[in-house]
Amino acid sequence: MAMTDDPERQRRLRALADLHARWQATHQVDDVDFTPEGADSAQRRSPSAQAQREYMRQAREIMDLDPDTGHYRDTE
Image (cartoon, rainbow, N blue to C red; front, side, top):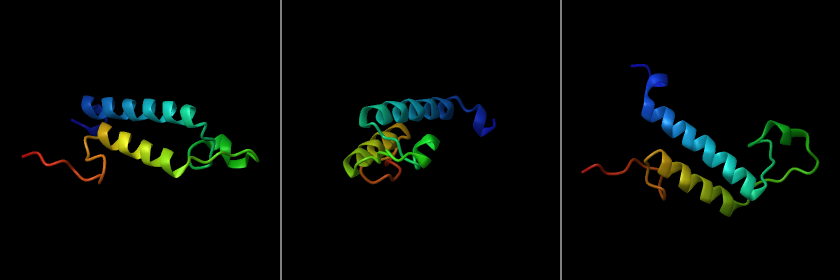
């Protein structure tokens, strides 16, 4: 089975896309690193460090990684 056909991978990618959209709207992020439209905007809004940490924790959880370290969780 190809990676693109893996239903679990597809579910996680959809969850990450949903998380990103909600996070971006909540924190009003408009930055070159997050949206192509933000690249030339004089009113660009970058995420705060706290918002970035929040996003990374949630993204790691979606990917079934330890939210604090980003390492694979122990399966034992």
